Length: 338
Image (cartoon, rainbow, N blue to C red; front, side, top):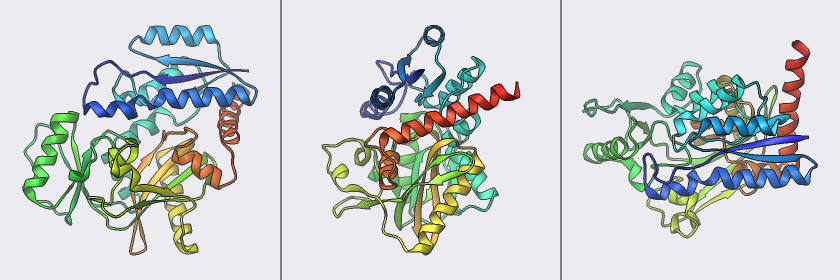
């Protein structure tokens, strides 16, 4: 059975951000190589189909490939992560069954402010927040508890996150907002910084979801701030990377474990995640504050979701097989209803 593995290429010059952001931007191709290799090892015929600047060429290659399903690893289009949802929508318009989240889910979770609006509306805990929009005056007073965490509204993979993202004064706040506006060309999300333990909750499935063993992010001594910065996530030669270490399964009391699993399940159901997802949470005083919902997390063999799967006795081969099986089941259901 032939399976197309789609992933996004990165333009020679990034549209926005820092030059070092290319490390994470190029991760989709590395991820695709691992998925193709694994699909081949478990008996499928993988066909890598990169999405570059030419959409027509992408469509032609998909049609020539004639896959049973598409393993969709695209995280944007030609350097624009906000177009992640459009790739999934294109696959739907072309009539392909694909793995991962549907367009609406990808669009909602890409927008951190909209995600938080929905979480609050449905009674799920998330840090207090406000937006500093591009072109509008900086906020003079905020009804939020300091310090504040300032991040790009639409990015993921810790893009735009450094120790300077945590601000404690109006001057530092304005400086960071200006940085987000000028470097990433988008609104800045300001949220209350939650002091506490940080966890990743990985889920697979859709209806129902299965929560994998929880992972804790341990921050070593000497870090300027106990956060997952861009360097801490991607730059292996950095001090921040060495001092930002995951521990899976996380040491938690039974009640805490159930609480974190419950809020992550509710968040994924609310936002319409599918096949696999990750929820980032900070636990403070028994309250699990949802930081982000990632509907398209990295599923490379050494990434967090695969690590959680291994802790749950699901090998990487089995993880990929399960994702393929879920997509094939959707295809069967569509044909059965036709």
